[in-house]
Amino acid sequence: MKTLEDTLREAAGSIRTEAAKMPDRTWHTATRRAPLGVLVAVAAAALVVAVIGIPALLTAGGNRDVADDIATTTGQAEGTADAIPANPELPEDARHVVTQNVPGYGEFTLSVSGPVTEVIDGETVVMTCLHVVAPTVGPDRTVGVGGVSVCGPNLSSTTFGIWVYTHCDETNRSGTGVMSILGLDTGVPNTVRLALDNGETVEVTTDDLAAVLAWDAPHTVTGIAISGRSAEQIASAIDLPLGVCG
Amino acid sequence: VIDVTTDTDAVPATVGVGGDASFDLFYARQRKSLIALAYAVTGSRSGAEDLAQDALTAAYRSWDEVRSKDNPGTWVRRVLLNKASSAYRRRLAEAKALARHPRDLDSSAFPEVTGEIDKIWREVRRLPRRQLEVVALTYMEGMSMTEIAEVLEVTKQTVNVHMRRARKTLSDRLGLEDPA
Image (cartoon, rainbow over the protein chains, first blue to last red):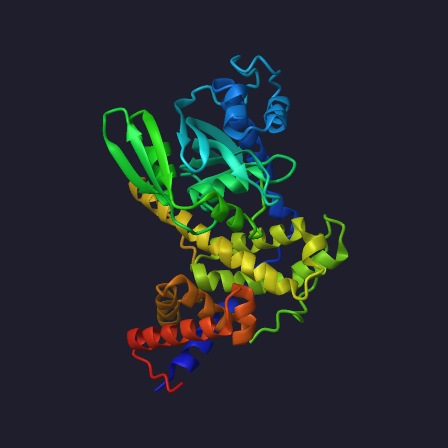
């Protein structure tokens, strides 16, 4: 009778054999998704700027430079934040816009947009996106404003059901912080409590957050509460090498 | 056992967009081993390929820092396992969503990893995350307890505990003897 040791070694060998057959990829394919990520990031940032305005961003993060950067990136001049962005790529159907102070974290802004249709590598992808902008703590432990978009469903794709994009500023701090807060990038669960306009309260883990908001929410979300970790824990989590944006 | 530091895969001709030959070599040496490790913990071929690519992207973006480490291979495996953990959480949401939108999905498993071998890895993936990581690093990478402790940033004793528990569980579930 084979031992557990023999069995595991044999099982590992099978996987290594298969992995060795995988075709070589050229390195530049690693950044294949970046252009769309940038597109969505810019679109989401512009959406928030347009709907909420720079004052809200300043309130949320207290970092005027970051807010100005977003405004510059999206072509929004300061003081015209209420204007509808002219960029035709931007989603025009933002809804469920919620801004709420979350004790321990600061002010969160959530919105949902879409569905939008993109053609990626010849494949039609229909996406509905949840956008979150929140105060974040970066690898350098400074506080700024960051964002993350969780997009789906991606029904015509054979690879992803949900795409997650971070909205990066030049310090690469923004998206990672928000992803950490939402538990999307650290593996540490958070509980998110959503108050709906029909009076119901839905408590979900962050695993379900995108599904609830992007696919299932027939109601306006009127509130959000996040429990789980302190700012220090978030900052600690961001010390992990998670600083990939795109 | 794979020696991840001496894999002699040829460097693809088009590698080098980043213009750093040392990273190109690192990429070529590590990629397939990372895919194997990622497959062991995820069971998805496309997911494993993406995880390996994402981990290498992280290395590329911090290459000046990563290359100065004693063992960049350890660092990139830590990144991969962290990403695998969060990717698993995302896949739970994906699975729920896709269940509401039935469609034909291509199997994402390695074609030759079937039957008994597939069953074994399914059981390994049912283990708690740390136990899964210890088993995968032991058998896919041939790492020692000390090396695994470095990757997971835990003590060697902790690795031993996870391995002992994993072996006990697997032995019971698979009905295999474990004289060790």
